[in-house]
Image (cartoon, rainbow, N blue to C red; front, top):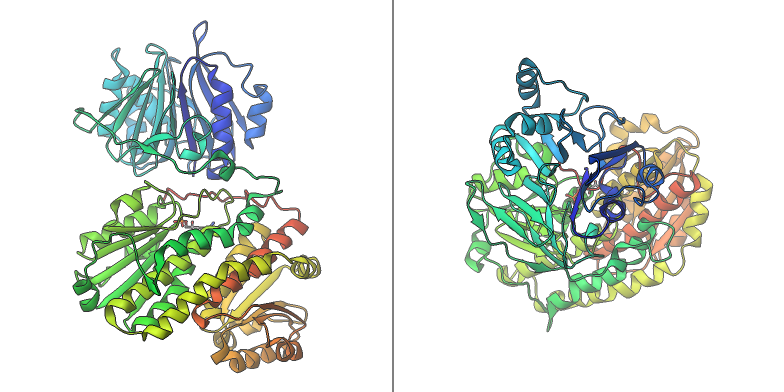
Length: 610
Ligand code: M6R
């Protein structure tokens, strides 16, 4: 969703704000704007519809905007179309106060009606504008005072950046259910939606918590709780560099992140494997709890949900305990049957997905133990879960997730192995072999990534299809879900994934001569069944691109029109390898179609609204 950034210092603010926004553009990119305090002319607003480049061009990279204090925003529209009027920052009617916001003010209509009845005029369709007009309504000379009053009145989710012309040496920031990071520089300080915007300037940060308000000046940052009591924030040092958040010579972040996967697997898995066993960082989950566990429920959205779908097969296979997978957006409203003997595993790259966060809170309310598998350190889901396993994938910038998916999958697998150690459901030699195979995954992946020409070729053959189906059974079905999502989100080709045996119960009516079916058949126990399903679609004229393991290519070649192979590995690890060609296929198809791969239309990386 939207990205916000704020700066107070001695240097010109606008170029720094624009630089920060560049790194946040993955959060939303339909319009952008800046509000900077100019000592000569007061608060100055510059906004532009479209990509951030339009704003950069308008301001000559920020150089034409004077002033050393300001806020910036890149928008993913929720209320009101992308337009100049609806883009942020929003300005109060007197021109004294400017606000940027990420989130949704749920009671904005009620507040808007009230303010209109008081003679306040509105200029946009946004929910955000009520914040700035309400600030002005309450403002009696102290912006912090007004901000606290506003925070007690608004409902919903927000990360807010506020600048007031009467107190031009400070920014005010506040958060509830939307991320906000404070950055400590030398002679300057920052706010931002995430650390990628700050890392060039400082590695020392604090993560704001719900209900907190921060007053940010050149010399320091004072944070208050919701009772307006000053509090001390813990500072953290970010342990990655600006180069991790840059393209490093690649054309797209997505491709760079696909290529980073072997290293990501090493980082996520190797330190957790010791002497043939899995050792996880200190968890509050006791062995007794794991033994009496009646049910595991995995909750997530999008690709993280697909990790859960793979995880169900893996965990049920390893533990022989029931594992359900739920979409976070459904979970919280479905009266989930979980209790204190349940473990709810929430999976989230960003750690800020609102639906997943809400599901986590619901699980806690129902008494379940919760464990987060999260990439972004210090994120809300990481902090609110009873236990967290970080995926250590580093910053993921492309909207379509790749390396985070792979890291989540391996961490979930390791968690499963850890549970087998407690439950005794896996003989030592089998566990050791599985862990040995995990350690071989990065080099196998490297080998796959060293030669991508065949997938490029297939993409060039199939990029103009308008509808593509993915079929598979068991783990291959779960992988088809991810392959299909990846393809559609970046190439805009309609795509569906089906359990191969299910296709004939309705969807096979859509298969007509020339329809492309990507058939996954890596899971050996069901290879023959998968072949039968391929033959079914071939009989209806489908063109089949088959995906199988090395050694099976000639059998696959007899039924499929084209074949991609992946190296052999432990059956439970096949998804870690089969995801790679699916990612590459989506990438090259989108490239052929001239799509904006890193910033697909209508999407945003971090979905902080319901
Ligand atoms: O940050 P999260 O893992 O919670 O995000 C969940 C989904 O929004 C995300 O996986 C989305 O589906 C990706 N764009 C898929 O590539």
